[in-house]
Amino acid sequence: MTEEQRAPLPAFPDGFLWGTATASYQIEGAADEDGRGPSIWDTFCALPGKVVGGDTGAVACDHYHRWAEDVALMAELGVGGYRFSIAWPRVQPGGRGPVNTRGMAFYDQLVDALCEQQIVPMATLFHWDSPQPIEDAGGWLARDTAERFAEYAAVVADTLADRVQHWVTLNEPVVHMLLGYATGVHAPGKALLVDALPVAHNLLFGHGLALQALRARGAQSVGITNNYSPAWPATGQAEDVASAAAFDVLYNRLFTDPLLHGAYPEELAGTFDTHLPDRHHADLGVISAPIDFLGVNYYNPTKLCAPSADSALPFELSPIDGFPTTSFGWPVVPDGLRELLVGLAERYGERLPPIYITENGCSYDDQPTGGGRVVDDPERIAYLDGHLRALCATMSTGVDVRGYFVWSLLDNFEWAEGYSKRFGLVHVDYATQTRTPKASFHWYHDVISR
Ligand code: BGC
Image 1 (tube, protein in one colour):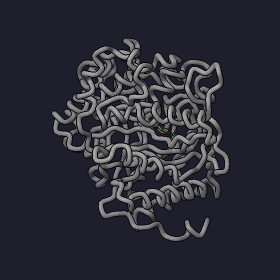
Image 2 (tube, helix red, strand yellow; image 1 turned 45 degrees about the horizontal axis):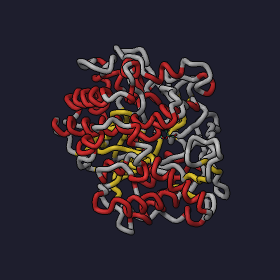
Image 3 (cartoon, rainbow, N blue to C red; image 1 turned 120 degrees about the vertical axis):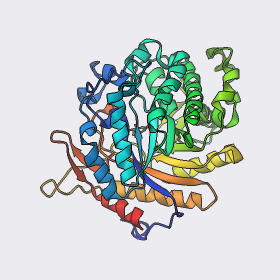
Image 4 (cartoon, protein in one colour; image 1 turned 45 degrees about the vertical axis):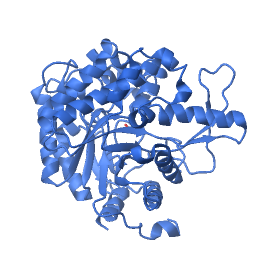
């Protein structure tokens, strides 16, 4: 530990919401139970070579059966908030139509248990696990999916809007578009490159319609979460600077400009307009309806250089040296959090709503010692400590951040990486489903109680 980490963290404002986050497909398991329908991730995981080790989310952390133990862990941790996601295929197995009451009952009891522990529920409606029938009908390439999504939002709100305090419509639409539809690294595994762009518009339109549906059912606090990554040019040369700017437009602004400015970045005019329905301008009013908060997920910055001649993209990724890395190889750059928050405040000014950091965390190959009772994860403590210091410094300059959610409560199914990456404050032994709080869990508990 450095001298800085030994010093107590600076104070956060009263009412700051300390939380932790998970997502349905990554922890629930019980893929065939209580009428749940197939999701695109069930389909994707069954394809050879798509997920490390052939892993699937069929059992995951078995949270569907162990939710009470997991809520008890959160109570022990002392968090004031829990961000979880709802599996659309559990609620509407075919992606449309009446609610599957057995699936909905799972979330109903979870939310009750959270409220009993005075843990504020923050529910994400879409964390990438579309019902397979929705994908079969075109998925997010189809405008109709936005309408179906709003219908699903309404069904969920009918049951939960009286107790869920914060709603996140979509998780990281940019990642779902890029990895799910442009490169095919995630479900639904489509590698459409630039032809994936309609997905952006349909996701945004789905967000706007879902926002209306939630508000009509009394939801008080509705937002959307995206992933942001400061774009660093590899050198000061004009081509690298232009590449970083192009990445910034695609990654950081494509979804946030329409939400907060009511327009797509003008740099995309031409490329983008030709990929969208003519009426997309008319949808911008729905898309840019005021939100109550912006969810920010931050993991690391991205370095860009000029693309090679045959590249389909206007940039190429370049390694970031000189920083420690996580087991994913991601550079640990706490100041990137400050950089992106200041960038958002400068770009959107008064239109920027209050922010929640809805994810921040790191993967390390944590293993139990001491007969299985101890999991030492000093790197995670250093990571979280550094990011919280950066956050506090940024807040002191006037950026309005209301809460922070560590990704993740539990080690879990890390998408295409299967179970090979551990992000949890709590270690999960997947063979026995034993949960062991890591040292970072106890550290975070102390941060919260101070
Ligand atoms: C996603 C999580 C994921 C985490 C770590 C975020 O992009 O929302 O589902 O596990 O990053 O990769």
